[in-house]
Image (cartoon, rainbow, N blue to C red; front, side, top):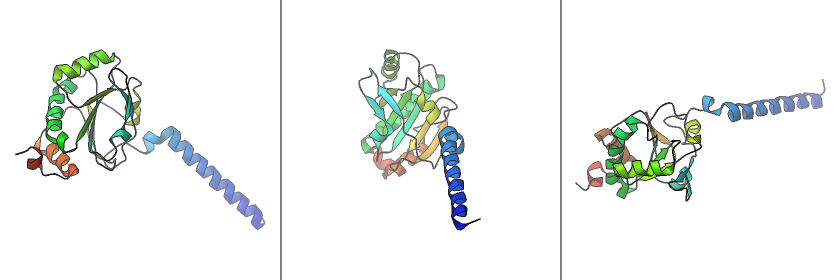
Length: 186
């Protein structure tokens, strides 16, 4: 075999490997690259209640974000929301952003009623396409991700949690670069 023929075979093999890698990432990406602590948070898109504007993770670039995926029919979601609100009231002035993405198949009015009923003051948005479930590999509700300023997931929690607990407050304070007692104004 000539040198030219050998290089042709090498290029064909490299092209086949590249095409195979592209196809694997394109069609099996979530299985190959799980969304977990230490990974980059996937982009998401949702709309504000009333559908006035689209929001995405890039809107919160450079911020510490608590991303909560929930639904109005989810009992544990209802139970944990007040602790998220308390955490937000403490650390929101320090820069914490809370984004609660509803995956309900009900209208925005019902979601807004839920928000008002619980007195939630953080961002509540709606993903009526349910795309966030696939992109974040949601396996239960609520699912919550704490994302640092660089867009890396620092905590992933499936199920109800006390987000105002000492551990979670310390995590958020550390990511914000503030002392836990200073943030609370104590």
